[in-house]
Length: 179
Image (cartoon, rainbow, N blue to C red; front, side, top):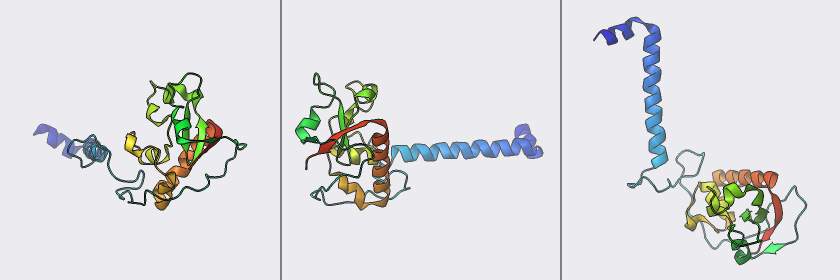
């Protein structure tokens, strides 16, 4: 009881108690958002990143691929099949570690500690990773999807542009992915 009286008598202690309470509420909210509504808590929430609780749109999986975004780098003439890209997963001898974003293939070998077989982002190596990156997924089902799916949602389109810009600035563009 004396503690509550001390808090009531001291504005500094009252403000501190309110801030602690708000911090706890924020932590609970963030934990709930992180875990989503899945009973297991391990599945990803089905919402677009950075956009509140907007659902991920259901789109036509058969949408056609078109040309990748314009590049600030010199264009590489090489065209990669999905099978060739898959060999760039970091486990095949002299083949560089490759990853495609928005249909553009990047050599991410200089980031082998991230994209190599033991790296935290190894799931993306050897794949068209745009959709998975945009929704924050490491699930195999979200890899190699038509990257144009992201353009059907404003939030995902912004994410796709952001990821493309990141890879364009950090890694070497080596070609495009065949459709």
